[in-house]
Image 1: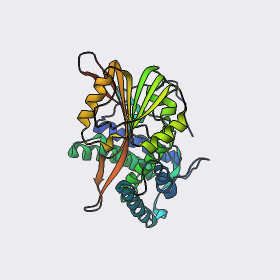
Image 2 (image 1 turned 135 degrees about the horizontal axis):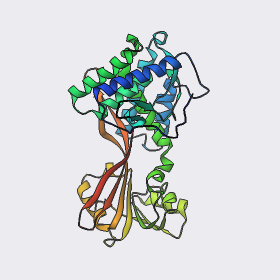
Image 3 (image 1 turned 60 degrees about the vertical axis):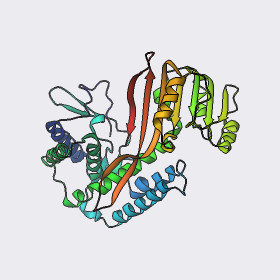
Image 4 (image 1 turned 30 degrees about the vertical axis):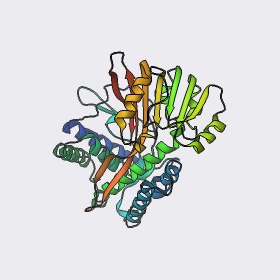
Length: 349
C-alpha cells in the first residue's frame, strides 16, 4: 500500500489546533479501517524489532560499562516484561504507518490533511500508530493543559470513526517509549550518513572536526573539503582514525577542546561536533572557540545523542523514563560578532 504524490496541497504545521488534531484522528482511523486484518510483505513490528534490535544498534555508540547503557538495558527489560503480559487477542492488527505526526502531514487552509512518508509502513498492532502520535504530542506541546486538550481531541476524532479497545488505551505509554527505542536504533543504523542531508550541498575549504574518534565521519568529510583537521583527546582513537582515513588532506591531532584551540582565528569554514558535547561541562567556552575559528559565513554543525534532552513522561509512579534524542543543528557565522541563525536542521524521534 502506498501513494506517490507529485504535489500535496497545503503546508506542514507542527502546531495544530484542537480541530486539526480531531481531523488527524479521523484520518488515522479511516486508514486503519482499510488496513485492519491486512498485511504487507514488509517488516512486522514485534518486540524484538522495537527493543532488541535497537539496543544492538546502540552498542556501537555506547560502551557497555556506562550508566546510560545500564539504563537502556534496564528499561528494555521492563518493557519486554510489559509486552509479555499484553493480551494480544484484544488488540487490532493490520498494516501500520508508524510515522504519522504533524511533520508528515500537509494541511490546507480549509483543514484538509494529506498524510505522507510511508518509509516505515509495515505490519503490527494498529495502536502503534496511536501511541506514536501521542508520543510526538508530548514533545510538541509543552503546556500540559493544552497538550491534554489536543490529545483528547485527537482521540475523539479517531473514535468518531472507530472505537479504541480499552486494552489498547492501557498500553499507549509503554508503546510510545518502545517506539522511541525503535527510532533510536534507526538513527544509529543511519549514522554513517549523519551529515549527508545537511552538508552535502557544500564544498568546504577547511574543516575542523572536533572529537573525530576513530574517523568514522572523517572519511566522508574529506570528500567535501580540501583540508580536514581532525582532533580528539584519545591518542588510541587517533591511531585508528589515521589508519582508516589515509589521506594527505587530513591531519589528525591530539587536543583537548575544553582548552584554548591551537588554531588561528577565522581559519575554517566548517566546525563539526559529533557525539562529543555531552562530555563537555562548559559549552559556552567551546562555542566561543568555534566562533573565533570560523570564517565569516562559516557553519557550525552539531550532532548529539543526548540522554537528557527530553523526559518522556512520568511513567507508573515515580519511575521516569528518559530517552535519547538525536539532534542536528547548523549555525552560520555573521561578520558582526553574532550568529546569523540557529536552525534545527532535523530532530528525530
